[in-house]
Length: 227
Image (cartoon, rainbow, N blue to C red; front, side, top):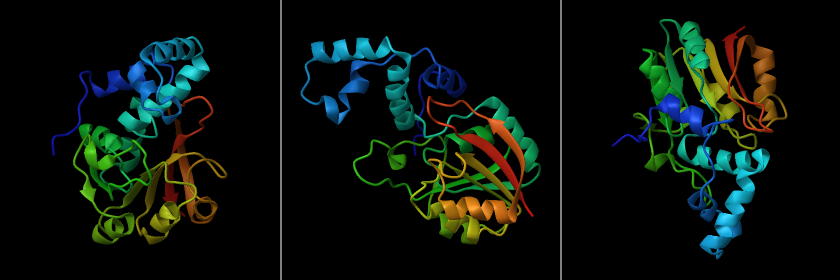
């Protein structure tokens, strides 16, 4: 696997292309949208100019491009440092790693991290983990990973679907004592209600870290220990 790299460093990229960054929309980014199929370059340029003049509209489309290039959540250096302190000498098993951006950043600071993902995404989404990875990722389902690596005491998941049993099935199968969760709270965009209810019942939240948010998105990093 030739790991995916951009011209800039990862942290510089996240600052420029993440929430509040200085990057502008481009015609190529707009052209990928089905809503704008068949438009001429002149029409697309006019559309881009209008979107770039409105910060809310600009960030709406910038977020789509960010997800396609990096993933659903935006790491921060503070978040990585807090995870390092939380994990200590433990080992992190990440399920649903996507492109492996978080795993890459954790490994860079010496955290023992094993990234896993079934490398699929439904429909015609431009999100394709099988084609773009920041680090090595084992092609395996969440349950298979948890059963295969019982020695990993820290489970990590980022932005599990709210309408999918992925999060609750992972949490129910996991036997370790620490959890790293990146997403929104109850009734948000991530994790089903059963997942959040189980968190309240069997886990104690011992830390929260704010991470960069897109407009209208309220995700954060939470650290849990088993009660």
